[in-house]
Length: 232
Image (cartoon, rainbow, N blue to C red):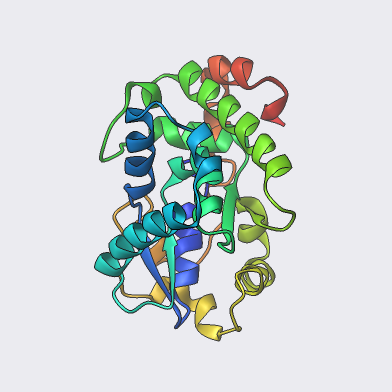
């Protein structure tokens, strides 16, 4: 989901000498649109032969090369890619898929109060945001059962804030990278950041915003009612 720490995780990884961040690419969604135009998504993904997979991979890598020329490892942090992990895993069976999670109320509240570059009606209504979150959790639970064990790596925002060095070391290791101390100095990385978290990732980690939503709890009943047990 947006506002779950995706930009922070990307910035940490980009502090590594072998990693570049491509930002939020739309290429996976374009592939899905083309499948849909033929009425063949998601069923058509499972019938892709080796040549078909290579064609999609080559096309995607051309986009990566445009954004991150010469990079050994690239991060595509488009949040809505969570809907298409089957396609992504089919094209890149060895890809590391990072699932950034955060307290449900905090994630949804932050979505509600953020002025996104591309606004959505669904982002301005507490009930709609809560329903989107429910759909996202159901889909991620399904991917957990379908993807090979260990392919989907969860990065918990609250744990990252509470124990930054331990969690950053864990992240780097699980991504198959050698440790570099520069990853702890992610806020010093000079690179363009075009998300709503652009200012936050220029600073050292702080836990000041983890429970910010509680100041407005009395006004968030529609969201809490929609989320139900997930509010915990």
